[in-house]
Image 1 (tube, one colour):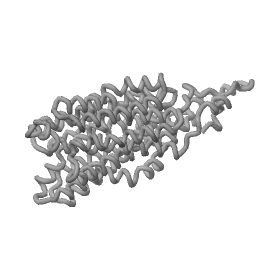
Image 2 (image 1 turned 90 degrees about the vertical axis):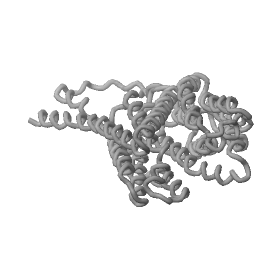
Image 3 (image 1 turned 45 degrees about the vertical axis):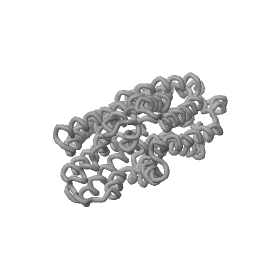
Image 4 (image 1 turned 45 degrees about the horizontal axis):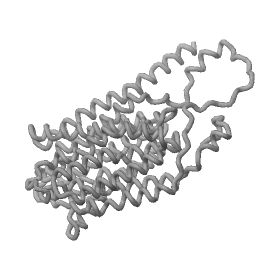
Length: 426
């Protein structure tokens, strides 16, 4: 990673060896630590009656409590990671999850359980901490591939964790499984102790002092700034805007999907509904690395296409009336989900160049969670007013707007090059 860019030997030596094994270890730690965080919330309607909420009326609110407090805490933890060490703050996040899971598992009242979920949000943040850790050790395509793998770990946990929790439920109630699954972030923390503290990459990679060279000929000077072989560094504002729109347009379809499928396809089994829910995430697991290879040099095009497929998939949900139609709609959404997540990882890796990674990924996590919370609120309001298909129409409109927002910069950036080249050729 250091050859060909003029880094000094001392700088290269300051950064520890960090290869595929270390990246996979970080992704594996995130996967096991996410089991309780992603696998147990779907069972809140079974947990809350044990704590005095007989009708589970607080399930919807408590579902987003960790997300809200995680969003509030992520920027602070990211800045602290840049100051005190990424590995130290990543270990803190894993241990924070373990403490909050233990408290939730042994809670005997709704107030205590709610406090545990608040702590989960405040003390957790393992995804942002893991990404900041990786960004301190990697850059460019290596970092974007690592971030793609991290998203794969999140998708895998989202698919398999609810199944494992449901399988264990006849022997251990979902409420007590919080305490049982606290061992997973503890195990992740133990595994992370064997990884190195990533070296701090220099803010700007400066080449060695060049030897004197003659000035270029005046006739060639105008051509230099117009010749670029790579895309410019993505502004943070653009990354945050894409992230918010992407999370909003995909998450808004989650809360009421099962009820919509049950309404449109009477008699469908819960297993088939669960498979439909998981289908986009399974598509990501199967195709993410191939998509990364195909769009590595053109991530903005991939994001624009991703929003287009998301809009098509959400519109297909609204019109679907058979199992086959829902399957096609979920696959379209899966294509958009995969394109968006992979290409957003590429833009995030681009933005991480020359910036403190902890603070940047902490802020990105805040934007992502804010999009998820906004989607949940919008889905609840639209469903209450117009039924379970309404959230999908809202998501379709947002995705279509995002298509224009992502495609126009690509078109306007290419157009001047053609006109300028034509003027020079005369």
